[in-house]
Image (cartoon, rainbow, N blue to C red):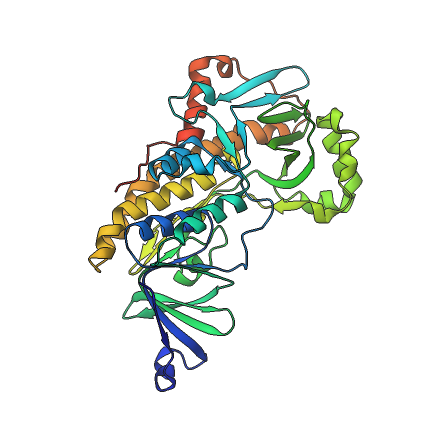
Length: 417
């Protein structure tokens, strides 16, 4: 179990003389970042009887414009954990296929209904509800502790080994852990503190996210709308559409300077039936800007520290796979590290094994995303030609390949008990 020890004033200089440490806590595993990867890893470890402390910098999970897609691969993981039925009792929508509509035609790019899975669809569930569900499940275990508003600032390192973290939240606190896991997202503080070296690509796009009302007669599922120089992705969120308006890399300031009316005009050019609904967009505060990145660190670990999810590999939004690959990372980490944590001896080779199992799938999906961005998105955004889907995309055998890659990943990941 996590233990709490008030800081001894006589020991403060050995901790860090610059900080007035309120207390020092010890745990088997300290997970930094309460996103999908961190939450699922914490739950899996807690179920194994391992003491785990989850630190989340925000004071709640209710943050907008984050990915809401739970793919079949994750639903199968939830089923293996005995949670899928209860998870699907939460309000959600189902996306059975991804289609692209141009002024001339409509083409299905991915049809999930043909996949051999109990969940042949993408579950559209607000991420806040998913995180609340997972952490509430974890809180059933006395060896789990969730700390909200914990802003991690420093690594605790002794003799070249990471021994935990220091965080701010009502004063300075220190957590000592056998293993520290950085699951703190694309702007990872632990990645920065650890000095990890990244391999970056040069994405061809950025994305503006906003919401507009959805009507009952609107199409189901996910729809991509391609027109001359414009790309809009539409995601069904019940009574709303979450729209992703794709722009050329670095074009945000130019669009912002042109004014909100110019953005609204551009959206209507692609989706004429939104001519009235677009008036719900009244202010730039309703628009979230995402600078698209795609990168991965060369090595995911240091002695005592492991990165997973976006902290280890920042994903492009193409295919919406980021959450699902992060959760698969968490499952593999739990499978590999549960026994070493129970034995209280986590070796560098154990951490390397996690990267070894997850790096190839990550590199494959990032290559797929780069291909889509460069071969499909970039030509549309930089020319006035209409998108003409390849005849190959109309062949069912090829249409099933992206569906499988998006829905299930490269290799299946299963929960080991």
